[in-house]
Image (cartoon, rainbow, N blue to C red; front, side, top):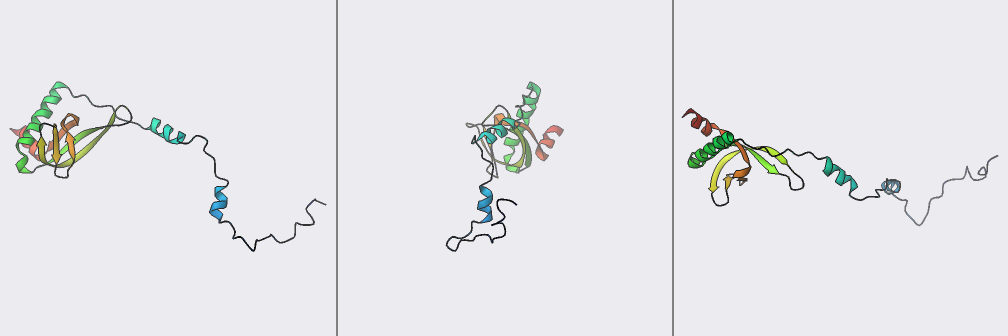
Length: 141
């Protein structure tokens, strides 16, 4: 005979005054407790990979400079160009390379930027490569 034989078969008590707690709230009582707030985010940030900034050789810089000058001199042709562009990471060394395709709308010599028709602003110092139909004409000349 166990200690609860006298009450084991009684119906479960349901309050007439209070509503039962929703199951989602009951489950939250047993959720794990994070003692170090932000620790998971810090670990994820440390594990996040960045790409080192690519250093162009003097020959590559010369080719890039010629292509950029040609593209700027022929802005009126509205040729679609593809840029490989480096975006520095704000939190750690390195960054990421992206490919942007667009038409140059304006060149700002003072700010050293190229503004595309999509209003994207590219810093000239972060452009790694330029290609496109207009550039192919330059190579044929």
